[in-house]
Length: 282
Picture 1 (cartoon, helix red, strand yellow):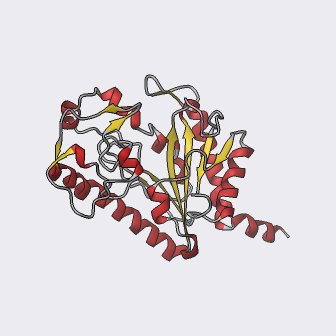
Picture 2 (spheres, rainbow, N blue to C red):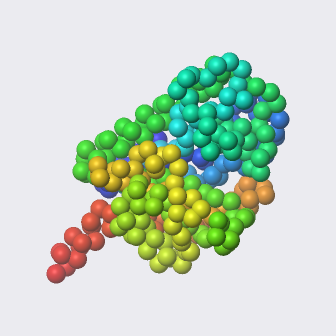
Picture 3 (tube, helix red, strand yellow):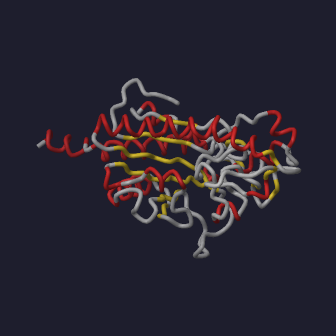
């Protein structure tokens, strides 16, 4: 967790999929090499959003990799075919994400590449959930509660990236930015409007909720009626990295600066500072 010197905006940022600390045993026992396992990372998104801390918002980053444990899922979204032993009765074994191999303990990375050689002991899966998933969400809940207590509201920016290849469900090329507010159910419309305008002013192409409307984090925490808004921001990886070598390219620094400018604009407008400045000027 990265804390600003002063938490001066009703905003916090979470980065659930950029973790790059791979347990050696996990890599050794996988049927895939490290580069293949890294295909599921939202690589370097924590670095792209790092300046939000300077702007006054705390940032929570999962340092463990998504291929090992995905905190943007329900806590027990598990595929029984992956495990030796009986899962808890309350496990969600039939979700679309489980069927696709992308549950809390993912079965695949990238283009359906299987991670594991054989079955995993149920105790191993439950240990990952208890040791990593629960602390992450405990910290996230605490930050949300503290932010809302201080400001009366909380805006959670859930930061991700997306592969540049492939088309969306309407057959269109992917834009630079996708904003996901679960069709207005996880964040009030004005929150998303401000973010869209901020990115567009900087020359970036933006769409909403296509094909990504938001995951478990936005769905679970975003309750606008209670004063908590959750907005997922997906960044097109081609803007900042070589997707084959998984390394930042020459566009990284420029994009980092653009994101900082967009977030500064959003933070000011979400906080009502611009209205205060206009009134003071009048």
